[in-house]
Image 1 (tube, rainbow, N blue to C red):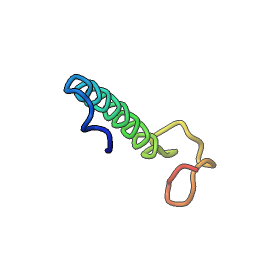
Image 2: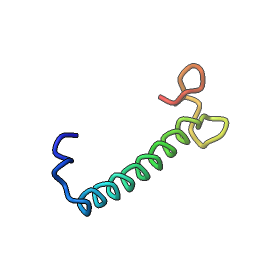
Image 3: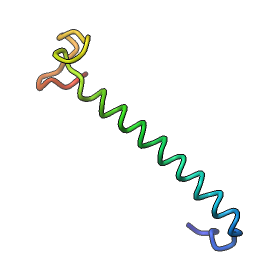
Length: 58
């Protein structure tokens, strides 16, 4: 985190706001990926041939 000491308060607040937006975007992406991982032929339109042993998607 070197260099942060030299930033103005306004620049630090801008950086924090940008990081908050990034965190929210990443949280949404993780949620979507977790939702996709939960799919299998029993709860989606995915054919059985696309499943690996244990029901996980290929």
